[in-house]
Image 1 (spheres, rainbow, N blue to C red):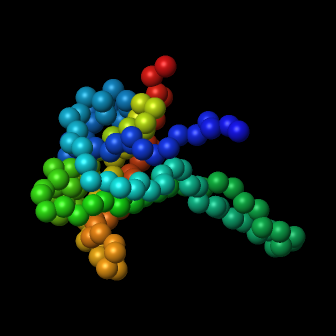
Image 2 (cartoon, rainbow, N blue to C red; image 1 turned 90 degrees about the horizontal axis):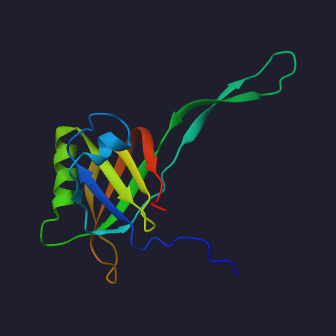
Length: 152
């Protein structure tokens, strides 16, 4: 049985209020990041192209092509704590200012994904009696993420 998959344990995410000087690995790596220490679950990210369609009147057969690319949103589920988390504070400030943050997501193997995003809010999540109170945020990815391979 093959086990060539990577568990999420060990994934880290950090934010910076600053923008990179250049939109590449060098520009993003030069920033100073603050960890978000309370993340319990990361969302999916990646390119999703919008379909462009055309229907010729003669055939009625729909033709499709790839249109604009949307890099999606990363939805973070976090633990609510009574002590301040500096990374969450950066998200709250960015949301209030309607400004972007730079994000550094480090996977367990050392690969890094950098991107710019708008914080669409930091929400308090309450559930049932046996559910911990949490926080949730949506990071709306703006522009193409930068992927850096894991060190070999």
